Amino acid sequence: MSLTDTEGESVAMANHRLLKALRREQVDRTPIWIMRQAGRYLPEYRALRQRAGSFLTLCKTPELACEITLQPVQRFALDAAILFSDILTIPDAMGLGLSFAEGEGPCFERPLRSRADIERLRVPDPASDLSYVLDTVKLVRAALGERLPLIGFSGSPWTLAAYMVEGRGGTNFSRIKGMTFDAPKDLHQLLGLLAKSVIAYLSAQRASGAQALMIFDTWGGILSEHGYREFSLAYMKMIVEALRSGEEAASAPLILFTKGGGNWLEAMADSGCDALGLDWTVDIGRARSRVGHRCALQGNMDPAVLGARPERIREEVALLLQQYGYGSGHVFNLGHGITPEIDPAKVAAVVDAVHELSEAYHR
Ligand code: CP3
Image (cartoon, rainbow, N blue to C red; front, side):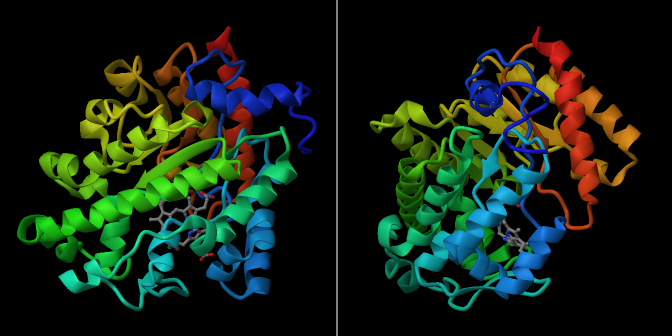
């Protein structure tokens, strides 16, 4: 599959499918991309990671991060590339000392343990402290040209704070949740600083060439509804408002994804974002009737479906397209990232099924 021939259609069309769907404009087929599409399920990713030595070296070397970003779009007829990086680049740039132990996920050498630790933090300057990310965005955009849009991203302030306070993945979140009750002022100070950091970071990605932006709020769903509104949504709203007020406001649609956020879709839609990412626990048809007139929807096939036989995968794709129904405003994706054991042939099966079966919904 070459980048210059997408199912015999003009490539210019395919390029804009994602951006049009995010704006709920008419499309020819439902666009698809996949969270973690560049990752360990791809043998070419594993080979390059081994050569580089570590995941963080890949992220911090723009030529390598660019190559990895392009790997999945060279192999599959996906409708977008997503920047290869990580959400934890911001806390790393703040000096917390990020590392990834083999098979154990992220770990900070200097997690936040006191008010003084929070007071020492500064908003990173993307142009100097995160220049490797912006350089990757520029390289990818030069490589893709007008063929496919590039999605830039950041973690949400709440999700970043959770890692910075817990210090690593795989905890029960007792420290960060404890702060919501016992030290809300300190937590709000941290979240405010992170919101400023995310605004600067996403604006810089956009100025460097990212054509859509996504906020990953992976841990918003561990909060109560009022906790979510106060500690996660309020800060995402600030980010949406800031990104919409700039000169380039209209140039890159913004997607909000709270994993486990199915209860609060209406409140999320009220933030003014262009699209909501859905995890697989939500019926996308019902989500559409709840918020579909306000924003587009992205998702939401259970990642576990990719373990099934290709015919069964096709049935699940057909069901999801049917649940969403006729018309634009749907970006097909999984409800969370693809897992490392998946056979890449299954990704090809999903992409082809989405493009083939969705045509009927856009006539
Ligand atoms: O989607 C893409 O293809 C873009 C790349 C991307 C990565 N991380 C690459 C990655 C994106 C968008 C992320 C976001 C990210 N990072 C999130 C939010 C998304 C989500 O999953 O909800 C989170 C929570 C992180 C933090 C993080 N990074 C964790 C918890 C881990 C370890 C988990 C695991 O799968 O082992 C990472 C590492 C990571 N980020 C890998 C990749 C490809 C695996 C690194 C490797 O071992 O090679």
